[in-house]
Amino acid sequence: MKLMLVMIFCTSVYQQCQEPHVMPESYNNWYNCMLAGYDEAKKKTVEVGRAQVNKDLIYIKFYCTPDTRPRT
Image (tube, rainbow, N blue to C red; front, side, top):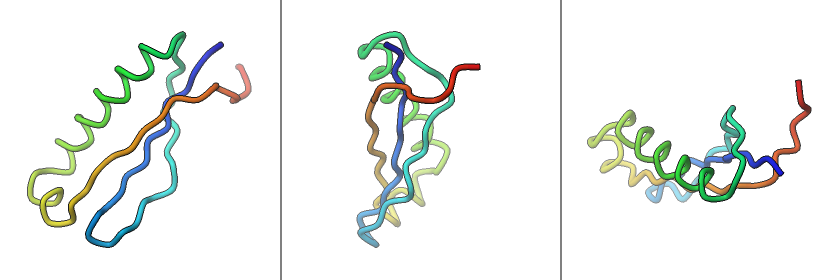
């Protein structure tokens, strides 16, 4: 079973989260999907930047779920 990584960007200041964002890649197992989630969360946190993350108390949630997207 293939898995897809879903990420959700949130702010503690405004108590809001954006709509879930499905990452384009599929993963063959839970372990690889979870590692990708941590890697992507770190990359996105760095992209947003220290000032914005600290100002808005931004955090990123993620989860892996069966990939139900149509195969091409």
